[in-house]
Image 1: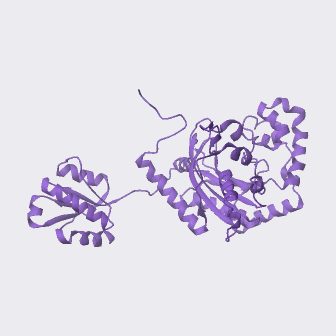
Image 2 (image 1 turned 120 degrees about the vertical axis):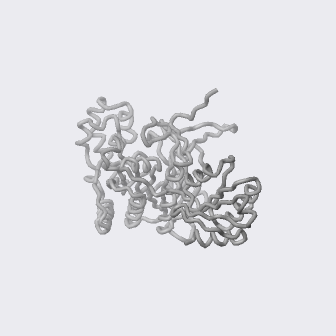
Length: 424
């Protein structure tokens, strides 16, 4: 029977993994500079975690989650996003009592959503995200946004744009909610069934509808910015001021609502502005979610974060034609000719690796020419050649693959010679 990979998933092959590792390393270096610590949560949680955290009215909860019952009859779900799990862990482990506040966390790992696969979007995808819990300072909003922008900068991406909005506090959202209901209700029958349901449950989500996004009522819908309370307006102005101070260009889009129920105040997306990227331009999204910790039984704790798909980042790099410098050079390749030389190469290989060198040898019985070609394919910096004559004289030939220069070295000094030569 021929078995194929499930639809919406992908194999990341060894030559592709190097690109992933390069990106992950860039991200981890940034996390060290910004003093964010890694947190690892389970791949599956009780379904209630996402129903409560993400929101019952969201497409994720209603349509996209991989949910199942285990043998004990418990309702479980493969995580579709990271924030709800992090907040659950924050409350359960009482991290709100940690001495260093706010708590700055990051995560990276697979997420699962049942949605239509398309370029750069999969049903299993790897998401990187950060969460800052314990600060309501607009400066931390800007730090989080800047961090997201710097990830794309670190990987070489150039054609990106930042879009921001404010969803305001509860007072602002309630006033705006009523205005949206009054605006859409007379013609709600012209909208999709999802939007008709959203009118009474979460009318803000109508603005995020992909089906009816070109409906005339969308462009004339009341703007949240006209309903911001004095506090919310002042908060958003401060966020914009800090972005201006840092010379980070941005566009304010009052229709930017994001797809999750927990957002309030600052929301943002980073999009690709490359013409060849495709119709779906979003690369990263996030915002503030004050009140979410309380929903999980924790104390009043403000929070903000973002998440990005590594697959979408790689697709954007490909669209811009950016080649990452992720080549993996080999320090030494041993070319062994004859049984005695092959036996010796087993010991030498182990000694080289123990000395901190990356080293390899032939395992399929190639001739001299074939072994040299194998060394070249692995981009070896040096080749050590050992044959019957070399063994008899207790020597080895060391060849520089870039210059083709060759040097004879005593076997007893070979490892020290290689350590010194490779380090130079």
